[in-house]
Every structure is written in C-alpha cells, then in structure tokens.
Image 1 (cartoon, rainbow, N blue to C red):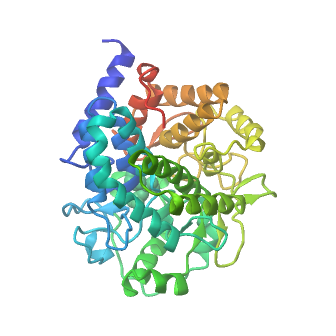
Image 2: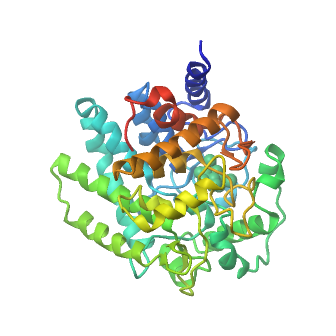
Length: 423
Ligand code: 9WN
C-alpha cells in the first residue's frame, strides 16, 4: 500500500474508531462527547464512504436541540470524567444533557451537501431535519444578532476559537470572583503550553456560572451578559449556512422570505466588522463597540461565505509567504502570535478547507490549491493532529482527530480530487 493510500485508510479508521454509535467524538480522551461543529466535519468525512452514517451524525446532533431552537455546542450522551466541565457544571435542564451555548452552524451547509450527493435517499431525512435547522437559525436571528446584523457569541467556547486574541480585552474586563476550585482535565491529556491559560479557564467557568445562575435565559443574558462579541468567523459561517438553508427551502418548496431577511441582515452585519485600521474583518465588542484589532484566519472565512473580498488576497499572500504550513490562526506579525498555543497561532486544517473551498468557488484557483497543498503536506508529514505549528508543522493538541481525518478524506488527500464533495 502506498503512503498516501495508507493515510486514506488511517483517516477512515480514525472516523470509525471515534464513532460512539450515532455520534463521533473529536478525539478519544481529551474530548469524549459530541461537539457541534466537529460533528458537521465528521459528517463531511463519513460522506466520502458512508452517506447513511453521515446523515446519522447530524440527526443525532439535532436531536439535542433545545425547545427555543438552540443546538448545544456539547451533547453529553453519557458521563466521562476525562472532560471538564461536564453536565453537572453546566446545569442545563435539557432532555439530553448538554452545554448551554451553541457553536458555528456548519451543519446546515453540510446537510445541503449530503442531500445533493443523493437527493432520492436524502429527501425524507431532509424533510425531517429542515424544520430543526430553520428553528436553529431563527434562534440565531433572535438571540445572537447584534444591532448591525453581525452574529455574536456569548462565550469564547461558542465561537469554537476559544482563546483567540479576539477575546482578550473583553475577558480581561471580567473579574472571576467567587469561582469554586476546579480540576482541569485537558492539561492531563495535552501539554499546558498548547492550551488556554488558567486565567482563560477561570473566566470560561465564571461565564458558565453567570449564565447558569440566570437559568440560561437569553433575555436576561442579553440585558446583563458581560461577554458579547460580534465574531467574523461565526458571522461568515452563519451567512453561508443561511444561503444553503435558502437553497434547501427552495428544493423542498418551502417559503424563503424569512431566510432572505436573515441573509440581508447578516450581509450588512459582516460589513460592520471590517476594520480599516488592520485591513481585515475583525471581532467587535458589542458592549463597547471596540474592535479587537486582531488579524486572524477568521477574516478569510469571507470566501467561505461567498464574499469575494479582493482586499484580502494580498494579505493572505503575505501571511502564506511567511510560514511553511498556512494559514496560521493569527498573523505571525502580531506580537501575540504563539505558534503552538491553540487559537493564537497554530494552523487548523478544517478552517483551511472552508477558506480554500470558498476561494475555489470564487475562481481563485491558484490560491485555493496552494492552501490545499499546504494542508496536504501538513497532515501527510505530521499526522492527524488537532492543529499544527505553522512554522515547522509539528502536531499539537489531541491526536487521531476526527476533523483532521475528515478534511483529509474529503478535501486534502490526493484521492479526494474528483470525488470532492464541494463545501
Ligand atoms: C471547548 C472539540 C472542541 C472544538 C473547539 C475547540 C475545543 C473545547 C475545549 O475543542 O474546545 O468547547 O475544551 O477546548 O476550541 O473548536 O469544537 O474539538
């Protein structure tokens, strides 16, 4: 078996091994539950060889939907002490134990792809899932949209980019008083230098306790919440998801007017996130109006959303020229750049895929292919890690990671050409 065929097999094995029956854990040990956007990537990977299993992943995810439409960022299908904070800390009273916040709704975009792969087999499943997707996006419109139309996050975990420098100023303004002592499990699994700091964790847990005391009541959280950031990454993923939702509505012959309204609002919202001072899309504190002055890979997700913002092309060229394995999660020219610390520098294969596929769809074939080749080499040389050092490619975080295996199978592998299920 050639090396690359071997990697295809390994990637499938990782998905199968991380399959817990209807849902896939991001990686054994470090993340023993079902995570929201991880499941969307898992479904994308499964679709390469088992379409039925791909649908099931998202069906399981949406089975955890709250009555108000929110789809939690973690579903606790059981209790596993290797992860903290578990269901007892979140204290939500959902039917299926869960966290109390969401994550970027990539699942909508993936469902469109699953359906297009086999519309006959997928029709009944889509009919059942569509109302759930609609309710989730209605919840985003009601509870996660700022006055300009950008999508906000109420906890760094909600963005999926936990310790991104975007949140530093807002997090520093929080004094985590009254926090009970706790035992982090993540740093038993992964070297602490690759993870968020204790100061970050204190605030993560303080924010959970704050919302729990308010019974996860969105109205109260909007009025009293201490962390509310408009996030370009989530905004672009939502915008793209809405376009896919609209297409699905059309295919099912459902009304689209409400979705059209959300699309227009989110388009206006992302314009409000353009920070002319750094020449990129940037996070913005809803409570103060201040930009975070952070040039990250989130900005390039505009291409995933179908926004052909050519101002960013030379910026991407500059950043790619400075590292071996782009795109780093933070501009290496930023003094806060830390090549192995999670969302403060490392390269994440799955964001490369979203950005690269978006570039290809917009006709930037050269840049798209460059990003794919960077990702291919990064994985082929260093394995299926959670994230990678952009300078030397060394693997970081968890290993045998679901989304990295999925990205390999569906986009980065040489064998993915031609069979690629475009995102
Ligand atoms: C908290 C599972 C998740 C990803 C996030 C990533 C990380 C969790 C953590 O792992 O977050 O949700 O405990 O660090 O930042 O994007 O979904 O892979």
